[in-house]
Length: 248
Length: 252
Ligand SMILES: Nc1ncnc2c1ncn2[C@@H]1O[C@H](COP(=O)(O)OP(=O)(O)O)[C@@H](O)[C@H]1O
Ligand SMILES: [Mg+2]
View: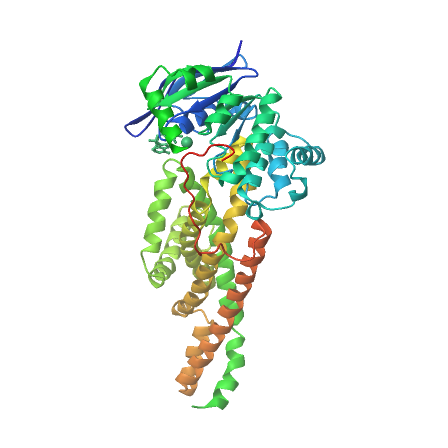
């Protein structure tokens, strides 16, 4: 039984068709990795799942509730966002909040926890990513890697059904990538359902239950990591993977 | 130069400083409230109201304040007579000049500050708002808790500039018979034929007032900025390398 299904998702910016009738589904516990060239619509697609981007058409079924992607009810949007968290490429930590407040904001104002409960939970989450002693630091005082791990803590604290990751390591200095990857890996081990857009191919191979190759607003190919990385069928997939390999 | 005269007439001028301050402060408060409303209407792009606000704002910003003052001076009483004749008891005869000045300067402040508020709003990274939505905040909560606190420090410098302009612009209200710093100067100057001395006094008073408010608002800005972002001063304009990296593989 799929946890989340979307069908025929379409989106254009002006005349530019960015998503072309995408069908997608994910079940509980799956880790789906999306790869593909930049500009192919990966960000637009995953952010249409929590309505940060509104699709032009398409249908969603999430936890057995049907929602029209183009004209969702306000309450449905809020409900979905309270069950699907997101980790951003540029962290997007709240600049006017400390590390711990970055986590409590969502717990208090999204989940309705009391301040005390939220604070306790937030400190726990910071502990998990080893940043408890940074709890009173502002984002401007943290490194990129620390920011992103707090970004991940902010998402996991909400205990969402699904976490969306949009290139979570792309803005990081190379030496900081490892720590963030370890946090995501741990989450995968714990059975967290995740959708991850990434260029880290070895990481993708390790955590993915399924890999999707995105190109020009479509899913050109999908399969197990083995199928996609060892035996890609589509020429575009092959070209993309070998270009990436050269870049190494 | 008659320094003795300058010193002697200064207290007389100081005695009307409250009039200048009264007009400026009341106008900026009223103006700010309406400016916030206009900014919300325009940013939310509310039907019918938004284009009307846009028109009024560009109209007010595109005309001299002295002309606006005259239009209100001659127009407002007529409007009130019209209301009176339609049966509303507004007593247009008892309309004080100072009320007219405050009315005109409030309109001017609304228009100008609405633009300042909008530009401060746009200075906040839109992703901050999206992040607020992503953790399940309602849009209004995200604006209140994340966007507004971040826009305030960026609003204060423009607010300060405008407020100082407003104080200086009140030097025009003597034209409708209000005796504030400028009005009083005219009276004193022509009485003793000591024009230069009197106007130097006036200059000095405006300078002190503007310096005082400028400093207060500058301190407010840095205190607020520090409270919001925990940073000492405005974001540095120094060199910050833009990091663009294509593909990196874990463990490299
Ligand atoms: N807000 C926007 N306005 C106009 N065009 C956009 C906007 N967001 C994305 N696009 C365009 O949509 C296409 C896909 O973008 P995106 O989803 O960010 O791709 P990816 O994440 O795969 O790099 C790109 O051509 C991009 O220029
Ligand atoms: Mg992207």
